[in-house]
Image (cartoon, rainbow, N blue to C red; front, side, top):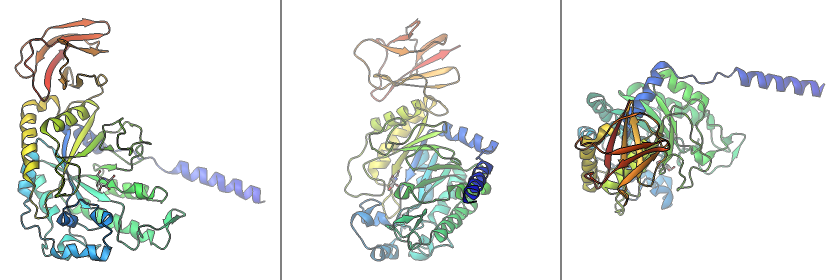
Length: 431
Ligand code: FHN
């Protein structure tokens, strides 16, 4: 009898598992994915009450600040100099097409007006305004996409119960159902109230790999509210059902210098890689490890050649201003994009593997060869290239360049080429 019951339970399980419908993206979502890949360059923003301590967004955790003491930061968070117009104009000037901003980080503080937690910028600070609404409205006006970073991990809420052991998919002593409901309520607010929101960027799953995050319900809800929303999750794993893009942290797809991407293979979804302009995500007054204009251009070009967007982070200051080191660098990157954006926006990658001299991006019948490190010999070689070439020109001035096609690929001669210290671009038109 017991055997029969077990068999029946097994059959029932298999049946219900099969009956679960797999996510199938709508036409609008597929269009959003194409558009996402076309944008190529986005601005990541980590900004919260932690910015006031000038030591990054993990300061509460890193400096062992008790949650109740940390919460006092809200009492004097008053970013009077925040100006959504300036931020959006700055992102545009840098050549960025979308903004991904922290709506709630691991400290649990909501940077938006929410009915579901009093610990939010409108109710808990003297600022009493919702900067994310101003940003959303400005993004919509200026044609910039807005994505919200949303932390799954919460260091302070009793229902999350940070540090608790996990038993049967739930934290012991927490109230997991209440926490899941809370997140769904907040996500509903973010998706239904804020204009221009086009994506949700989850983070913090890695803190509890063994818990049941109810992603089927959470992703299902988001796509029900707006099927075109792009969902990504920084779980450092291969994408799971319901996600619309795959992200990599501080590494180009396929690399694993951080150790985050041990279990992460590259899937078929649109890709994004994020990195920060210095060494910190949130404002860090002591971090002067600024990336140069050249480093940022190289990151962007390398990401595009591997078919990935580049989401570059800045941590604004607590008053809402962006420090001049960041604005100067990104204004120069924007000037470069103004001239050379055609070789990045709307392109796709994985045309040939990365070479010692650089990489290739492409759009329909045009290839853009990015020489990032000019070789000593007067030519570069593009392996595997089999298409019929119509013309090879310098992108900067259109002058013709000599080439020789062989069965193994093509030699492009660089001796008379005017070089660019950031990236010498050659345009190959194929038939
Ligand atoms: O812990 C966070 C960190 O603060 C930051 O938000 C980055 C951005 O990719 N993600 C987490 C670390 O994986």
